[in-house]
Image (cartoon, rainbow over all chains, first blue to last red; front, top):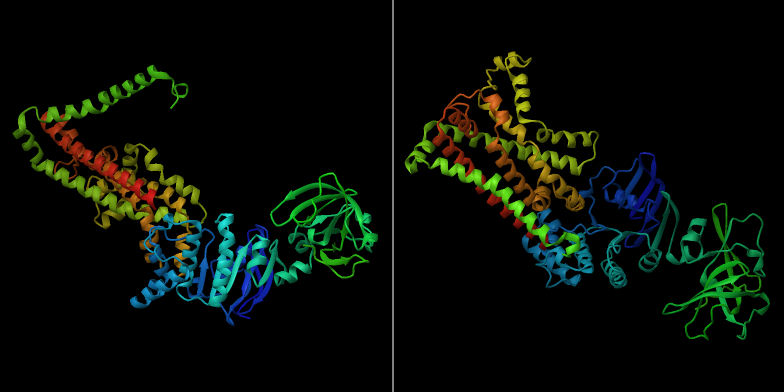
Length: 352
Length: 276
């Protein structure tokens, strides 16, 4: 493990920001600290950086306990949420700052800054000031600045939050590629599940100061272990009257039943349905075109569930009666989550 | 702007005229009078009054007090603004309020406070006597009074600017291994430069013109503890109108110079915050 947190606790007054945090990160991985706001993800990041001190527990980087090592000596690159670029310095001076502080050789600084300008596609912008740049360019400057002193560990606090949606998508893949190419161990904080799923190798999901689950995006998505995880990922809809769905063996005493859009197949009355004996009937409440898919809300005996249909399929109308087949459900019980399959469809099939 | 929101043409003309009349009566006329009286007996008399040895001594003392006040309050202002905006601590609100005290307290009272604190009746008096320090009715008292009344000028300019900037950039620099003074020089100071200069100018203006507190502490010893404003008063009370106004004109000229510097700083500052 390259970065390790052992039994970390941190309180701000009565507020428990971190509670019994334990995890390890392998070298070279790109890890997302994911959670809703106030879940303690940024506190964890700042403790690793040395910007906050844990009340108890140990933080190890490369096998060494760093609790008493000041932030500046930990060999960490940090990208701030609003980038915190030095506004009275040019792009060039921003990137060179860390190296100048380390009193690196002048020739080396020149060469390194030049290298980073090329890497981040900022050639030609070196004499600009941060306010003369777009959001995406600023983020790239922040990234280059953090990387300049060759950190062993790169920490990014909500790196995409301050960028508009369009550019964000582009930057996500760019950043992922860049980090993979450089091989630097990286941890980024985000509240956006899509971002975490898309960018990271591993997700650490936080909630109320605790870690809910750790795993690859696919693992967490497919096998949520806790009720929180089950609800946080995907666009699950809660079932109020689950008994209406056929061929499910619903045990006694469950807390919630969730169904995600990809667990559901909606077919028109006259369309072929292989498992016609286990379908329920529902009414389309909403049908919206979303580009790659049609987002549906279907009312099945009082349960309003989200579903999707391919845009090429024959359109369904609001008010239309349709067949609804649910392949599986997410069941939560005492904060544990598990999957319940449709008896007639043992094989889980992903629609669309 | 629309007429309904501004109240029509008549109101507009009236308000502008009123402002002009007011400014003329209360600012331009008195200033013109100062120069008219100063030169009423010709250039030679003016020159004599201005180069009089007591006048030069007074000017020197004013300069000395101003330099001390600006230096001390620069240090204090930076320290206060820094601690209030960058740190969290108990009593921060109280400190912020107390800093403004010199602005709200009458300078005469400030003078009296120092008179009682450092005068011959105070509990500090024996100690001061032993150390052979004379504060009241001496130059240190004048400096002290000037420092007191100009106390908040620099910190009050700095605090809002530093509050708006936050600590992100400093944190980023510290994380890269930069030490305190380097961070101040490279990150913090460029951000507060214009506010800082503006504060110094205000502090200078106030320090040069201070009368009340200094008057109480000075003892009016000509050639020793007389500042320019005090000198003007003495001359005036002795019915030496030409010298009184001549000395006053020095203060007016200094004030105008400061006004020009001040607006230049304001413009530059506004421009630089536009671009960056």
